[in-house]
Image 1 (tube, rainbow, N blue to C red):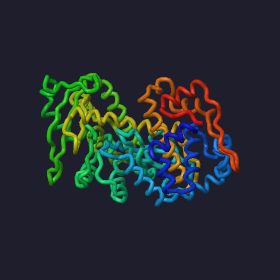
Image 2: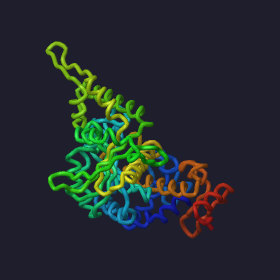
Image 3: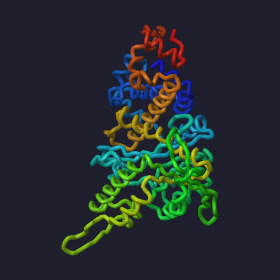
Image 4: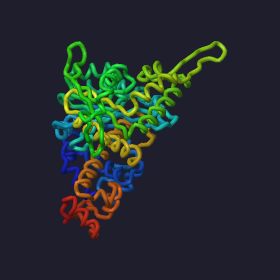
Length: 443
């Protein structure tokens, strides 16, 4: 716990939790430490705490943890988010994404059947998260009903930020969040954003058609992260008020084959949606363009590909990518910022695969909400430790989990009563890790 305690203090997390949750902040931290190290079910946290912080272990029994999670109310969590964002977010690019978390719960109104990103046939809730590119830290999460699609979440998120009073931010989002309505909303709020636009939008295809014969020339040649990309950028006033946005077009010949494969995979998914009778509203334009749907009284609905439209798209637009940005004029910078959003995907990977959250087994809304919050605190700590490991090259030798397990035997044991705490003996590897992370050897 020496490493996690140090980072919780170093990034200001412990101080904010104590200011909001008082004495309960220590239970929240220790429960999140347990998740970071073991990724196990919180019901086993008490046994782990007995050998790390025995003074509060009894308050982390299965029953007491359920009680603790139920007390983490919305007002306190929103106060935490406000203070945490004030601490972390300053002139940062915020990557926004959403993931599905499957659940066995039948008593939570947020657990619904919907588009499950892990292809599991379970009801789910959706979890939206913002991640700071510069800070490399998660800054906010919000739960959503499992039936809501990516494209429908943005207005709700912006409303939450108005209540938090965090000012205008620069959002980075993939094409799953694109819709004219969402861009209208971002522009009207005067929020800065960089958003991928699906290439099946007619207005983007028209822009590609206008530059198709010239983009491949020397004027379009650019190197982005040692990769050759042909680029065209133009001012693109948006909406009736002609707000200043930029449309950035990119063609990558190397990735064209990958783009064709991805496009065909998407079409197969869209066909499955249509045939199953579960169409996704955000995919309607693709349905209209690339499919022929016939209904007969005897055979019912028959879905087939519009081969001419599919062939035209592949020949003309495969390999192209489009970003629309309000705030970044330089197309190279826009693409670099957009590519860096992968950090939020790593964050989700930590959340679901490393921290025992692949499926939620808690049932009531209050306990699920509390569990999500403790999980979020653990993700903050993992992200902070990983950032430092990258800066010091420790990441070459350890994953975050491996490093924490290596440090497991070095702990400060706190006893109740008149006895002082005792620190166990450090191994050679532990001393090297502490020195590299800039953590003094405990007395």
